[in-house]
Image 1 (cartoon, rainbow, N blue to C red):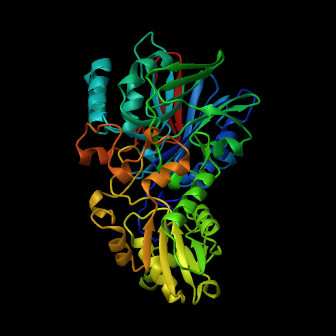
Image 2 (image 1 turned 90 degrees about the vertical axis):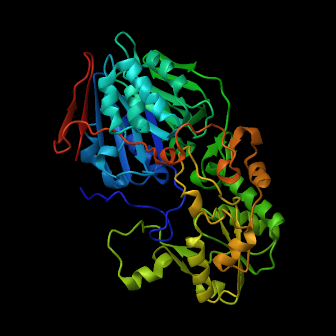
Image 3 (image 1 turned 135 degrees about the vertical axis):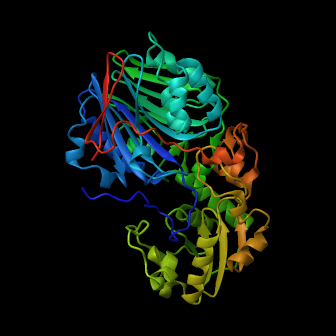
Length: 512
């Protein structure tokens, strides 16, 4: 099977790292359905949340199998890979590594023993008290388990170890004991031989939704993943809630009081536009951001053009509000990720043209308003502006549907360090001059929040304001390094990696 090298991305400028969510999770409990295929299509809908690896675990009630590999969902799975993944429970995961090696051993779902069987776990988010949790592992399970973690103390490794459970404790009981001790952002989907579990941190920073199939239940990072398999949206998994789905039905338990602080950047960029978060259409929020941007930063121009694809809804809103005609001035090659072939110096100098090319007949001689979703380092926008001017644009006015990104994220978005953020220390006029734009305008924090139709107190805006909803107990440099990885299980050279478990369950990793 042809596989990727785990380095695909949707960034416009080769080598330029933009904001990226760490993961997407998908789980379902559906007797009588082909759960592995449903999980495959669910992950396909979540591909934008992680492009480095993909994995699916299934349970038939007696055994859990996991198949995972590097690359995109369509590269990792085919009929041959999915055929052994039988059962009525499935868990899927797509991963983007914020740091650390992008290798098979770090792909998810994880697989580990529990007191009565096996757990497979997928995690979206980033924990902020990992050192404390490692101590809790030793307190609960002894120094031997702690010693194993010391060499690979990462979010998913620690969570999997904590959920191992004591003799006589089922996974649900263990989760209710452990989850109140976990700090940071975590949207979890995990399974054992008998059930599907979903949990969300008390702040609900990363999204997680519950859906209904005619013969089962689904949990997913976004509602778009429910749509693709024909599931109806029931509701969001509440902050501080644990959901359990098994032969006894669905039950909800609360392990912490809700204190909502949903990530506003999901509305700006991370989520698919056809997703709904907290009852608000992401596409509608982005269009409204564009309308507000036109009111706050008007421009004398001939055309409004988006930076595809993430800038398109806001550009439509800007054009609608301003009365300036909307046009597609840039064509994007949707099939280019990060190229596997090392480009020649000539090609490397073309940079952004590997993904975007201007429609010269559209933009030549025109005063342009170019709408994008955010500016991080600024290298992509600088290259884009240069390209538009070379194509004949008379003026280039840049409008950004997010405020200046000035602070790193500790809750699951991979931003550069603060020193690398172009807006750190520069005002809008200075950033615009650095980019080579005729003018630059960012939406205000207030207008961005208003577009989400959420109460400001229920949103995390830390990357824009520096107001972090949760303290970071790790040293800052360590917290930024925490990644969702796992311990390698078994010999990675074996086609089938068996995992010894307590009586009552058996798990295995299928490696291509």
